[in-house]
Length: 266
Length: 363
Image (cartoon, rainbow over all chains, first blue to last red; front, side):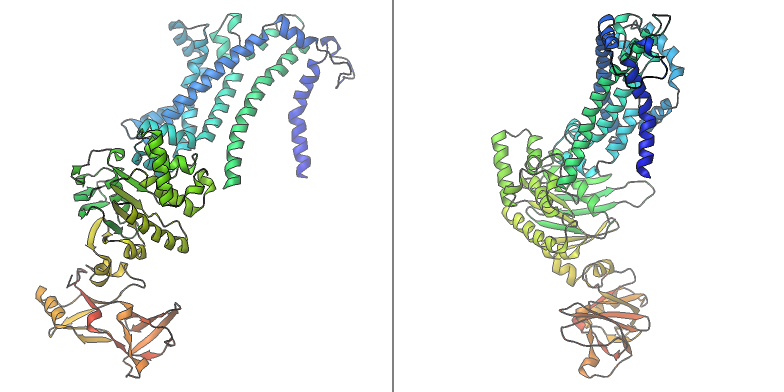
């Protein structure tokens, strides 16, 4: 019974993906044949060739990985430091800062696009990588997630390190960071994914073809012909899933690998 | 190496709450193993943290050796600490854990290696050094924690209930081992525990704490034999001292339900000297000082055996006479049955007398 439910769920989740995969391997004119040819007996690779030769798809992927990679790396640094300070250090205004962070989450992102556009334009950063990277760093979700992980680190560990002559930075570096590693992986996955699929802001903030990301790049595939080239679009969709899948497998290995080792030895 | 001197040290967490540590003054000699004993929440761990610099005193001065350390960070106080949870760094091996205090002090590699080997040798950890913390048993973790603390020869070693996470057998072994370490590595140890057996067996001196105050500082035998007040008397000793509430007679005797005895002259004089109020006194007797007389065929005197606990080597017998209740320790082989009527005899040398404020008259 449970298996049947899982199988049904898998089918529902996988069917659209398989349909896109199937479409990407067909010429667009045979798409509307009836009955549909679910598994093309003569797979057509032209869509992929066209995507990779006629369009700068590789450049889009490079841009995306660059932006998402930089954002993820920088966010891990500042979020973990901010979370440590907000969790374990006593300073005036701590609660206010925390409250402000929570409050910003309540603002719908769409509401921020126009003011953000003005800020970025006035800073002279429109159509640069900075326009894609800097606004993304202001997201407080990572801080709040990591704060929860740091709260779970026993205070005695930190006391031990302080008696062992570690300063605040060393406590953070040698005790806190290793202890919240799973949290860092969670935040990295989250931030990376959000960046990878972000569409509206990159569309607003960049104009030149050289700054197109995978998300905005794929959108350019559609309007160039009167009849949408579904085969090409599908090929783009399928290929765009490759980098993010690889990144996730790496992250997942980090997450699972760690805890499994600990579990077995303990 | 250095002693520790506290003068009027107070730590208050909130203004409207009683102080966690209340005006504690104490001098711990260089090389002494000093035990801070008290129930949970009495402030003993806070006092330890104050010495270690993990808490700052609101009032008072803390000296380690001749140096005033109130504003010195924990890492520069030349103290080391062993925590109840061991607080080993989980992502490091045993060796890396022991080396960490040296690494944070930028000790040269070769020198650090030697020190780690030496500390590991003292605690017999040689074969375990490469293991990760989660691959160590509780006792092994405890030894790694001690090795990490002694690796750089601190002037003062602070231990916060280091044995309370171990099972009984391991606790006894580790106790002996800690004493051996103390003998082989000179240095002052301040040892916090709520376990009076640990305190009695390990301490050169014991400081008993109650609600933030240091109520008695003395050798283990003195704490047991001449407790400063009712709290200490009731806290130290298993099973605890029994107390009977009653009044003094003008002739220097003590009277309560089931008890009417003439106090030893010294005790009576000390008791009556204080004032005229003869009410609200209590008599304290340890179980081994309560003798059950009808076992020898004497006349029963209104006491009833309420409960008998056989501990193997001896038995603890609960005796009741109205509101008065006494515990007696009977030697191996003694047989009494619950419900039987017996007499009670209290030898003069086993008697403690506490005034209305709980103070021991003689202490």
